[in-house]
Image (cartoon, rainbow, N blue to C red; front, side, top):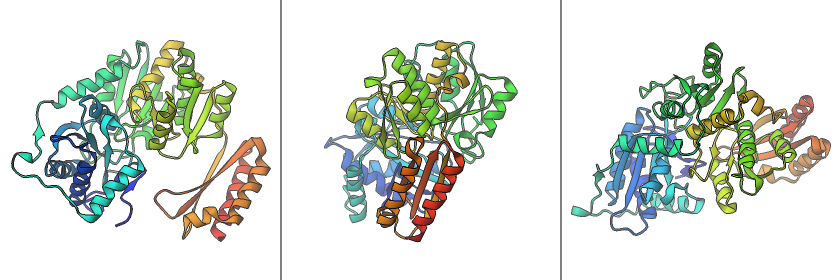
Length: 445
């Protein structure tokens, strides 16, 4: 068996590579590793609305209860809600069944440790080892886990809504927002939160039927939210993904505001309010050079982590910092959550607009995006290619040519035999030429 865990849990084609049998084994192994030696461990289990989630939730629940774990089933809720409730209920761990922004046929299993924190590599390896060797603990009689009914779905939903509203005291009356719910896990929560905060809300793609999640909508397909903003004269649009752990935005003119620009806006807001610990923002190596330039000019330090919000979270926890995220729209506020939260990110953006009386386009103009070219090169051994002396020399030469006007990033893919070549430069033609030259050098190794 190859590596099961990717950058965000176990993911695959539901009922094929991610079968109910595998889901049971993953759940049982996670239970043995994460139960903290408790006689009656408890796990929170939630899912997004894709059809296969019903099947996989049943399998996960069977795997957990067969290992002696009681299950708190919270139904369809965003990933950050499951992480929050895992901490709120002092559960040993939490399980979210979702493939995030992936198409409907895919699904995934995300596991949170106690407190709602993502697992580190060592814990994932222990879980995989148990799955591989087939070792299981199977209590009988009263030792079998139960699906507990002392928390209702409505109750958990409301707790999460209250938690989000407590993150900002700004009244959003006067703002009109289009929220694209991607027919996903936040189809009820997101419109409710924004309305209760005072905004006028136009919800689109908010009717999940199990088959339409992420289908031409949400954060990976922005045409719908852009069109709705323009048609309704809205102040902004917020586009969530299927499990609402990230969002992108569009301003009143329909211009895209990506995760980097969102972080720039929020970092300045938090620095002004004294919330930005050590005037530091945590981003990933894929964040645009323009973010680094804008933050440097504002006196804010940018620390970079590996790609994946879990690595952003590790850096945030290590330094005690208060804001981090990714260009893709995962934004993390450790004070309010242990993972990216798209609904919360949209709420904080609107709070900044209400506080300043400025439009999102004006706020986002603090950052200018540096032209970026990304080329994916198929290789036979990504690690060997990335470490090859001739490739390193080619990268060094490209960096010398760019000087302070750009940067080069060569990164092996986390899941495929690919090497990703990224070049940023103020001159788009130079960025394209250097990226193509480096890609040829990588392919030739």
